[in-house]
Length: 270
Length: 270
DNA sequence: AAACGGCGTTCGACATTACCGAATGAGGTC
DNA sequence: GACCTCATTCGGTAATGTCGAACGCCGTTT
Image 1 (cartoon, protein in one colour):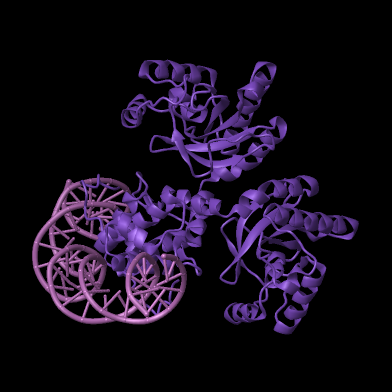
Image 2 (tube, each protein chain N blue to C red):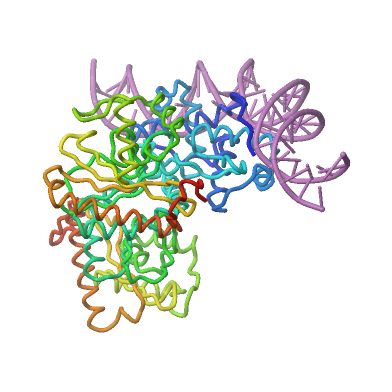
C-alpha cells in the first residue's frame, strides 16, 4: 500500500518539462513552432529541441514535414484507447446507449466522476442533434450537469463538501444552482427519485435527464444522460425519456453485475 | 523546414525512461508493482519511483489506493481524444458509418495508414457481429486487410516498396498474399475497380470490402471497410454491400471537399 | 541582389541533477 | 515472532541536461 507521498519527493525536471510540452500542445490544439514552445515554456530553444526530439522518437509528438511545426503524435491516441478500453463500463454500455439513441433520437452521454469533475468517456449523437457543449475526453463541472448531480448525489457528504470547496459553484445560466443548501436539497431529491434533471443549468435551451450506473459491488461508477433542446424535452415525451433512461440505467448496472437487494443499503453493500 | 535529424541528436534519457514506462504499462495492459517496473526497465527501484512520481503528478500514471500498483492514467485518455478530434475525417465520417451499419447490419471500420500499417481510428459494430480482431487504436498489417490494400493501392510505387521491404508479407491464412508480384497485380486491379476485397486473408471466415477516402486535395487520407462472416458476404447481398460502400466512400470524400474532375489526375489535382 | 529576420538544428562547457545503493517502515505470510 | 516484499526516503557522486552561441536554410525586405 502506498504511503502518503510526503509532499514532493523529487519530480524529475526533464520529465516534467516534456509532459508540460504535451500539455501545452494539448491546450493550444494547434501546431506550434520550436520557438513558440521554448518561449511559452521559458526554456532555451536547444533544451526544447532535445525534449521534442525525444518525444518524437516515441511518437508522442510529430513534426510536420512541410513547415516543421510540432503537434501531438499518434502514439497518444493509441495509448489513450488502451486506457479507454480498460473501463469495461464503456464496452458494456455501448449497445444500450445505441438503443437509447435509436429509440429517442437524442444525444446520449456516458461519463465518470474524476477529481470532482464530470469526464465524458463516450457519446452517441442523434442525427437531429444541435451543437452540444461536450466531446469525449472533455470535462464539465458536476454541479450544473445532469450526470454530475447524479454522481454527486451518491457521494459521501465529506467528499461532496471537499469537491465543492475546491471547485466552487460557478454560475452558467439563470438556473444554475449556486448555493450549497439548494444543492444539498436537490441531491436529496435525486437520491429519492433515482434520476436527475438538468433544466438549462449549464446552457440555455439544453435539458438533460441522467441516471447513475452501479457496478457489481453496488458502487456508482458512472452515469448516463440524454440531452436535447428544451422544446423536445417536455410533456408526455419528457416522461417517456425519463422512463427509458431509468430502465437503461438499471439494465447497464445489471450487465455490470449489480443485483439490487432489498435492504442492501442498510447492510452497506458488496 | 526540418532537416533530416542527423542520426540521433541527444535523446534525453530520463524522458526516454519515463515514456518507456508508459509503453511498458500499455503493452502489459495490467497494473504493475514498482518492483516489476524497475526490473523490466533494468533500473533501480528508486529511479523508477522518481519517474513514476513525476508521471503521477501529471496524471499520466495512477496508483491503486488499495495495493499501490501502478497503471496508465486518465490524462492519457484525455490527450488521446484531443488527437483523435484533430482528424476531421473522423467527425465527418461518423454519420455515414452509422448509416452503413444501420442499412447492412455489419461492422464498419475507419482507418488510416501510419508507418506502413493500418491504424483503426473508428469503428461501429452491428448487433449481430461475431468477434472481430480489431479495436480502435489497434494496428494490423496492410497487405492482408481490405482497407490496407485500398490504401496501398494509392501509394507511389517507391513508398509501397519501402513499406513491404520493412514489414514483409507475413502469412496469416491460406489466402494471404505473400509475394510482391501477386500483390502488385492485386493493387492494380483495386485501382481499376475502385474497391478492394479481403477474402479471408487475415482471418478464416472473415470477408471485407473497403474503399479509399479522399480529402479536398484528392489525396487518399483514410479508408473504410465492411467486415462480416463469409457466409453473409456472398451472392446478391455481397453485391449490395459493395454498392453501398462505394457510394458511402464517395459521399464521405465529397463531405471532405473532394470534387472529382475528369482529367484531374493529369493536371495534378488540388 | 544583398541584407535581414526567423526557422530548425548542432555543438561545447559548465553546473545542475538524475541516478544508484542502502536504509526505513509498514503489511502480509509462514 | 521471524521473514518476506512492498513502496518510499536519503545522501553522495558521476553523469547529463541545460544554456548560449553559431550554423545553414528559407522568404521577405531593402
